[in-house]
Length: 173
Image: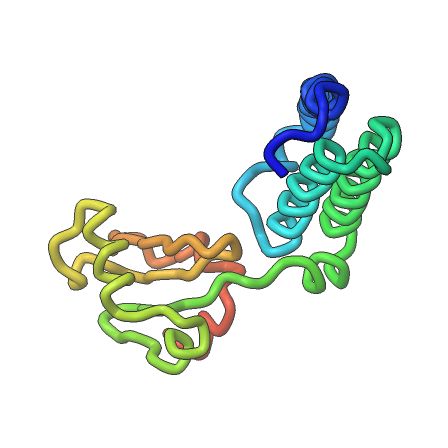
């Protein structure tokens, strides 16, 4: 129950070190975007990588080569989907959500907030985190595709280029 044998312990150490090194190499080769700010798809792949690492470490039935193959398949699929989403708007829409306006020029969009499970306190916190002491200084608050909340301060410009891809921005102005 507490100890099986030294062979199992030795295997776990050796395979653990090699699998860890292998995972680091796969992630370095795959590029910075693999573990960047994550959308839902990226999060799933990251969790799957962790689960695969744990399985390699603890299961005698899974050889290191099989585990490394699993790492390569997961990262390869993530790379392929990211590559396709850059080249195809249909794939991009399937994989990534769009940013959503939560607040614009003094108005909270309560239906969107309710749908996205964001409360007013979180919006106020985001404004404070940006050094703002009043919502009168805020042009827009956006729920980004990675779940972060962005705050755009009011300015003298009339073109709001950073709002170009925000869902429903035209209806809510």
